[in-house]
Image (cartoon, rainbow, N blue to C red; front, side):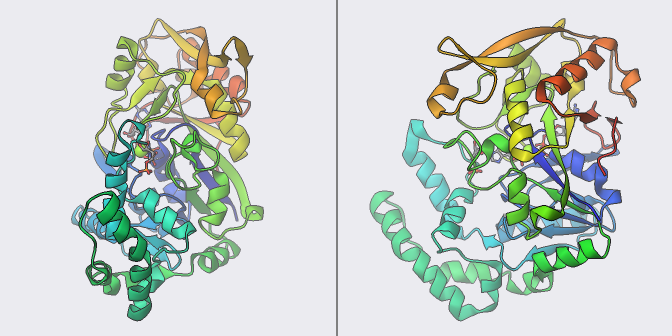
Length: 427
Ligand code: GDP
Ligand code: IMO
Ligand code: MG
């Protein structure tokens, strides 16, 4: 049975949570495969708003098995904070599973993330300060602490001591901060062991068996294509594989079992944190998008940087993710503009680029080549078929489709679970 991957096409916050939630009642498992509580996925169900960070968005659908895959970095205090908050609102979280191979965000990595950012000053990345980068760095350095280490106290202490050997030197001598006692970190982690134990699984085995048994598996990305550590706007990226390839390494499902890749694409562009952004608007038009689209971070509350739709990025996302379907979100936010500018290419020091420039330097110099599309003024939030949209809004969708080279299968016209036009079924 099918495995479908959902990724973000731009710099995050495209509406992955809503898209995942919408398919919830038709899938058996929803797997989060990368990132951690740097993500913020907002799902609106019948007037109730849920902000999910570490939990897969499938958690809100009764019957779905939500799985935190091996590619995720887990802050246990956040995990149980979210679980308890959902339970208090009547959501059943008892099916939640956690890969034994997922890495844990140790308390010292939260400190190091924030301290390193302060140290970088004007060269900072603008991270969410959740310890994501240092935890993935430990994983790659083979100094990481995994979920399974909670069940062997001796090994856990050895690993924490190993990780802190150098980190304590850096904390004390470079950052002028207090060194961390290994026992202190171990105690904090062990405090969660009993609650974690019943949730722990071999996620690769579980998902293979689920697919063999006919379950539909949805793999939900955090972050997005341009925040991917390999394919994003490095170094202004997150530290995980947020593109479709990451769905395989971060879950244990092989590429040969993936049937569909849906990329969520906002009808304009936003970015949180530092880094290049060719279509960014620093004027009233940007403020209009921010206000109308309520573009404030779900995780940090920071105002999101806003700009026009960028077709170069859309094409790039189609390529690196092998996108089969796009979900075009927040089309309703563009309502009321006389004309809607879209970026069709870049001008890099006088040379036209139709594809993402190869180098960071060229991307930093990219100026958008804009085309003006006619706008519409009718409220489209009630549209449920493509024909319900004003002709200019239909033309906008067709333009996007042609520019990114893949079909637009779903169109978002409002935050609620129901506010979408389904042109082609994603499953
Ligand atoms: P994610 O990180 O990709 O899951 O996206 P976020 O949840 O951080 O940000 C998307 C925001 O837009 C959320 O507040 C959603 O409720 C909202 N949203 C999603 N789709 C639509 C849409 O089609 N129209 C409008 N107006 N809001 C939407
Ligand atoms: P969702 O899943 C938008 C950005 C941060 C920063 C950079 C690195 O909601 O789309 P990190 O803490 O990951 O080391 O920060 O990545 N970032 C996001 N921006 N949406 C997200 O997630 C993000 N997760 C991280 O702002 O620029
Ligand atoms: Mg978000």
